[in-house]
Image (cartoon, rainbow, N blue to C red; front, side):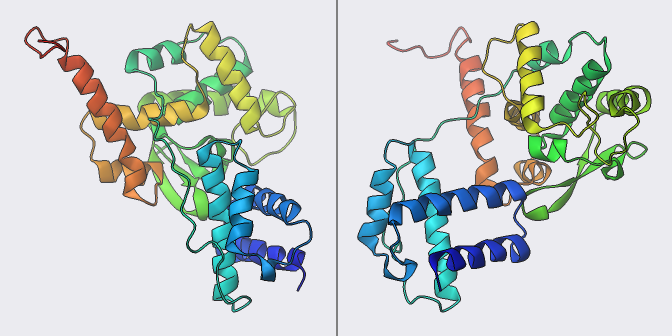
Length: 295
């Protein structure tokens, strides 16, 4: 088999058996193409541990997280080949993952969320953006899940949306009354204007009558944040982090938050306990009898 045939066999497995999303598949494909470029024609069968280490060194100008991702892709690729009896041993087996410095996710305070969401509504685009932001903050869904939301996924009578996350895993996300209000307003009064007589199963539409993209929504969010005087760097994921942090600070159970966010591993959700603990510590230090440094 050629290297390309090995790669394609693995990508087919990820697509049809693991059912990974198109974005994740594209990321894996790009990583494998980068690896192939580095190999300069060397056969997959003959790759050694030192080749893999050379590949990581080749990418050492990148952040540790990116290099760790590259190693994960190659390691999983070779695990697949071993499992399929196409090679005897994984050359990545004894290579340690690059150390990743842990950074806490950025989030907005409840006051900042209120400030962000309280922008003027004048045009169909404004009402669409308002509905999108309310859905993001009410559910904590990923932006990819938001832009792929379909009309059939929404139940405004029961106040929930059906979300298809990573690996096409399905979950139900409850929505708040205010989210339901603006989602209904957008759907009933403004969506048809944006559609311009086109048909679409997708909920959120751009000015050309097509489904809005992640990049398009990110651009709109940045504009709204600037107009509303939000000085923090903000992305759609910031609202996801804010949602989880605010739930936890108001006493929600960590397992429930894991379910709502669609995390497969509870350790991913546990990062939010650090955010809440830091906030509690900061608040406590304002107490007149709190211990101060040097006292």
